[in-house]
Length: 388
Image 1 (cartoon, rainbow, N blue to C red):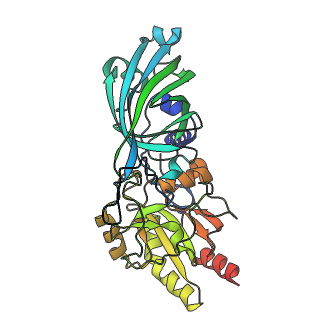
Image 2 (cartoon, helix red, strand yellow):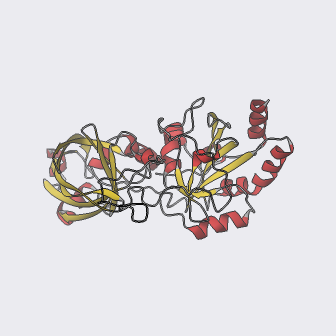
Image 3 (cartoon, one colour):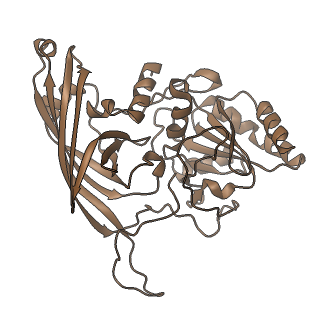
């Protein structure tokens, strides 16, 4: 896909308009600037909420984990201007039904949210006669991330969630309202949206971290610094602390990025079918050995997406194993979970490509960011200069 599509998806990450007028899917394409492949398209903290007492328990009978849930419907009322109506558009409504459970494992999606829900979505009304007018080339999403904080309602598809109006909480009910005006209609002219919905909120047994809690020690042998819980911003800024993250490794365990504190890190967003990512992986072990010979410990942390056409899909254990074995890698290869695009779209905007990376010092401060890969020479020079 084109850079235009990337810009639209970057806008989806930060603005309410793209979400309100329809659904955007994230689909990167090959070829990019800076020696990388270009996509056309959030770290959980380590604390977990219980959502309730879960009953009594003791050392041998701990109370069950509890998480919040959400259930409700949101309706989009669409009004077209005269130009759009002359081209055949008609005013209409469509409704989505949401069923979600609390998932605090990807805080980077919505740092301002008090609670984030991973929700299934069903279009219950208006698919053929309304949604098709608004988004004629897109199928409705079947899964979304939704959440709220400080009276603001948020939605997203697996990268940074966008503000979507307000939510008023009254006991176990939440009422959502939003309005969007002067959007370009597919047939020409403009359209506007009045969006309203209501959610019922409750609790249920379940893990609010969705299984993303690091073990006491890593089976794969990674170091475990156990630094304090991360409380900073979820943006990559040179000179500031690298945001934390929770990812699965080839041992099917949750790895916390900040557990690698104490070594230099190259935190790379990669994809399996990205040629520059493959070239980088092929040179990785020689670079690490060269640094070790100078007395400097370095990990290249690969955050791997399934493919350039599916950057937000599931990176399976088999994919992690295959990538590690193909290049005889000794550093962590982890399933990305949208962390990479969320971080690096903020940094590079429409020029973001695969691979994109941050070079991080042993105190977890960002030394430099890079889009694309040519060689490790400049990275080695940067690290050796910092280490002196």
